[in-house]
Length: 313
Image (cartoon, rainbow, N blue to C red; front, side, top):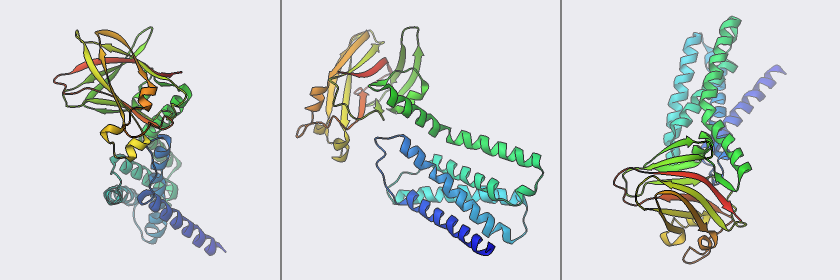
């Protein structure tokens, strides 16, 4: 009976590992509209390497005499090496490689060692507690980027139709940037997102991961402070899911220009014009994916400060 139980347990561990390998390499999902799902998805790396550590501990290290330090460094080395191999192999299946995923692989291997090493559990209780504390601390540091994104995603859903308030550094995780520097200034009456557009052909900030259904709203509004002493043009771009699937065609999106006077500017975009912007169709206002602010042919750093960005009925 005991032998049958061990066989079943081993088969379960192998089966889970195989399923996770399939998910990591071959299952493709659209993560463009949701930030929580990919973060939860990435935690599969931890589960995969917990399974690998289990197999190493129970099928290899248990078969011969070795020190606990040999087990420890072997599992860490295998986790890093195999993690790097996985990331490069994922490129062949159409995915991007990520050093963060390798860190999660390392965390999974470390957790697996702590859970399944028989030699570890033979040490004195004080040493075991210290190793567990170090492992827990390392795990929390490693998963903190995912925690930040998940918390901000929940907050953003609650605050919609406000897209950005600049009240928290968490909000910066919503922004995609190209050749810009970001910072936050807090004052008694408002918070400002400071954006310095660096020398580039198209320095850009892109705001993503908001509620995609804008169909009930008439205007997109924001406050922008122009720190220059002269008028400054800024381009605004919006696109939906169809635009991305169409290959980001130039004539298939909204692109407008606003001339910013020195000081504060109230910027209002008529969403009906956004809806009619694509040349051969209407914008899907229930599937807006990204809002972008950019400049053209910037020769030196230009600073703007953004107040709240929101939708209005």
